Image 1 (tube, helix red, strand yellow):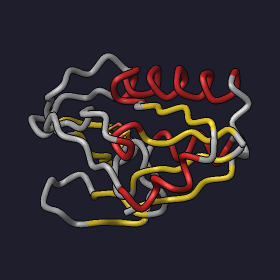
Image 2: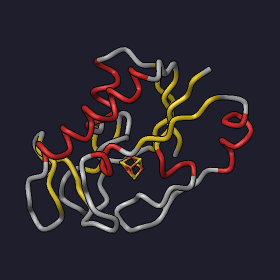
Image 3: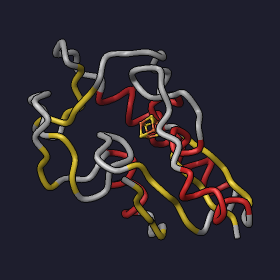
Length: 136
Ligand code: SF4
């Protein structure tokens, strides 16, 4: 089976703070499948490290208030193309991210409050019918 996964979950240091969030719990499962790691924020051309982003009123903003919605949309489109080209069957996403989070993401106030909303990439994947799993 071909599986795509948020790149930070498999050890790529692509998070805004320059770290990864590798989850060893995925190791056994991922060893048995062909893995395509993707990071929509890297594909958007965002630097590492970078300012954190959150979604506020449908727009993606940095902590200092810059609107980066259109850049992230481009990154999401690129990530989506990679998944389609590789005929991915399952996507494993990192929770709470404004890009990869499924169901709950931060509320745009940079205060740690979660609200019910998908990240941009998660939303696009749902729209395109991908099967999604989420890891905390
Ligand atoms: S955009 Fe997704 S893959 Fe990239 S660092 Fe954030 S959670 Fe990880």
